[in-house]
Image 1 (cartoon, rainbow, N blue to C red):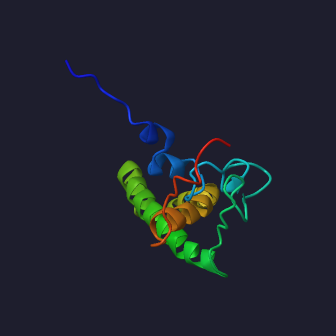
Image 2 (cartoon, rainbow, N blue to C red; image 1 turned 45 degrees about the vertical axis):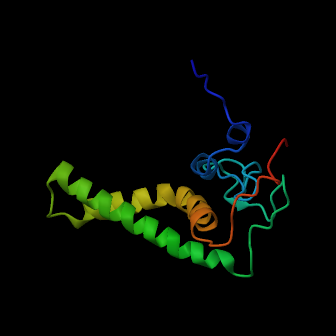
Amino acid sequence: MKTLSLDKTAMANPSEFKSALQCKCPKCRTGNMFVGKGYHLGGQTMRENCPHCGFHFEIEPGYFYVAMFVSYAMNVAEMVTLAVATYILTGNLESPWLYITILLGVAFALWPFNFRYSRVILLYWLTPNLHFDPTRAGEA
């Protein structure tokens, strides 16, 4: 009878998707990229360096300007989905104020999410030479 052996490196290395959801450093997947939670009164503050491995998040000056385009794409996807859902649920094509109110309200409510995850998406999946380094990971 075969026994399953667990690979210790697979157990020690967190998954890329889970680390991205938790806004962890893309190099070590241990340190937090942001100060505080996504929705808190202190605002959205991104750390300059990873508190665990010291990786500098802004790879070059102006690097996060590209995150604005990612955020724009996220906003467009959210607004189109929401407009279609509003039409399906209400059947209302007459009142533009219904759509304006709902779309702007949701856009305002989701701005912390879009700010945070546009930067995470940029670092994790849109930067070609940025990969997980297992030597930087480990106990905090």
